[in-house]
Length: 233
Image 1 (cartoon, rainbow, N blue to C red):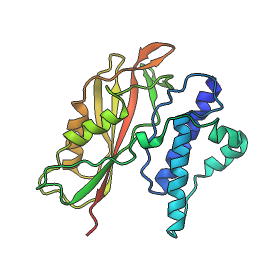
Image 2: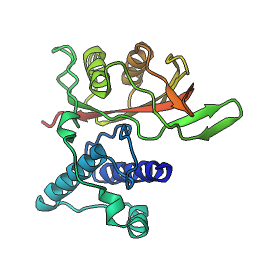
Image 3: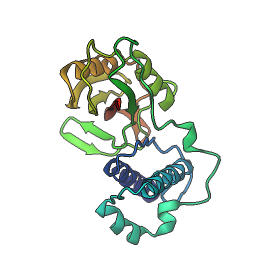
């Protein structure tokens, strides 16, 4: 089962890279599947179906499809059963929105109409002597992923006179073993005012349920990307 979970994480990262290479809004969430699996869980299978649908739409629109080189090698090594897993259960990606609209004040929200929020896929355990490894259970926001989206959507306030821009802000935080948010910093910014507001919103989040390793709470680094798309004139 340990190997299955590790394979699941690797494939999840591959899907994220393919989505990013093709400019597809894509949300991944932590695996909650209990039991011995072939490397994917029902939610992961839903992610695969969503990604396939989006890639097919791009192809039908005459757009080129970009692939991630590492995925081809892993596909051959793991086989299709590892990529797609067992039969799909009731879980559906439709329950996890792939695009979140963040509405600022009407007078300020004209330049940017949509903001997507993606959950982090890579979680790194932090030890005193540096990076340690992967956690077995990732931290969770109170109420789950949708509640995190709603929190950012409802609390982000567009700066006055925002420039018309598109881009991604990546905020890295440390979620302590007590679930507290510390060390919030911008890893990738798009505009000083937007970066500052994103930091404010993230730094004021309520306590999370901490990540665990071997059944014990641990400090975990977590990245939250927020994507802005400028309104098309």
